[in-house]
Image (cartoon, rainbow, N blue to C red; front, side, top):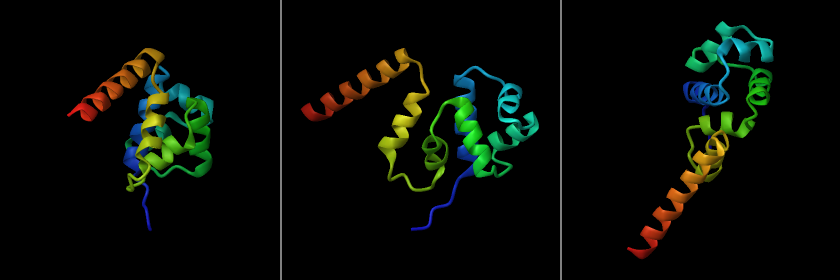
Length: 112
């Protein structure tokens, strides 16, 4: 099965993770030894980053490569892994609220 990377989705995920960490494009660029303009292009999906660049960004943002790359694939067969990666970038209170909501939805579905 052939899967293509959606670089716009990849960029959005990087931007979301960066903002969750409350760091600017300039700060991320400095940490990763890149230019702020390059980070901007990656976040907009107008540049294709190298694997090394994606790795440095994932390390700087403390997110998994799976979260950045696999969530960007057209195939949604790894939905649970994707959801876990997204939730991991959130603060504990938000994580707790999401888990409570999912449990409530599952309970509702089970009873109906």
